[in-house]
Length: 384
Ligand SMILES: Cc1ncc(COP(=O)(O)O)c(C=O)c1O
Image (cartoon, rainbow, N blue to C red; front, top):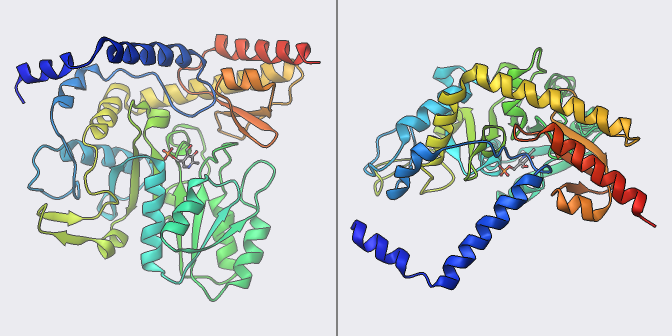
């Protein structure tokens, strides 16, 4: 399409339609200043990448193979995968991955691979697992059992061991949380592997949902086991969470030998179909690549340390005000008893049962934490 036609297309909007866009922009801009309840970093600037939005870019197919669709960013996607593979201690020659539409797709990919390897396998996951996982299990028809969670959100190791014992004859597919949605709890992979060993279950697959934790634990001192070092089979991270992106995205990593089992040659795109989606976003790998090069490992380490420090500050401030807030080790998720609805809604606080949480993402300031707290205290005091 010529530049002239594009500008004509813009002119086709009525003043009313233009106003609606303006209104939405103003609304989003205003609400962004009260964005504390969800784990999405809003500090990014990808303006140098905007020219790519003028092309129908598409990363269809396997990022590691040539494709007949040339308007892609596969080369950059491969570098992004290499970065996250290194962060999660995957052996370069053994790992494969791609940039997904988000953590959900990465988890689906892991479960899909596991189910292909062990069609009769049983998936074990805790009740603190993200709501999308039971849906994925239904979609891929994977047999599954929900395991209890402990108060802090970890999988209940006793319940897991007891349940494994009943099903010792069936391969186990472990869906481990590396940072649960509500409390940021990390399932202990050593204890999970011990439970498998105690039950003499040698056929097993471990997928780690590291949606948020996958970009926190690599940067803390003495992290718990959470990655390929621990002998896991696949892992998913969200890109729009700690890294930050205006478009949801994520990273799926899996052992190459597992992916080879599901690869199918497709003549139409002249490459292998190894991903969940056909057409895939080619811009999000550029966002991630750009962020990786702007921050580097040291930059991300500083960012994560800043968030953890601010999370400790928030817990302290809540406690000082008599609100029993808490957080798990190495977590930027600050959990507290939910406050008055008007305040929870104003600050976009995610709720579950009696709990609320704030996520201390890089954009969260001390001033915002203090203001939220002041709003909770004021609304609680004003309540009849
Ligand atoms: C632990 C966990 N897993 C998976 C997801 C889903 O990730 P996404 O929203 O990137 O699809 C989330 C989202 O918050 C999450 O917290």
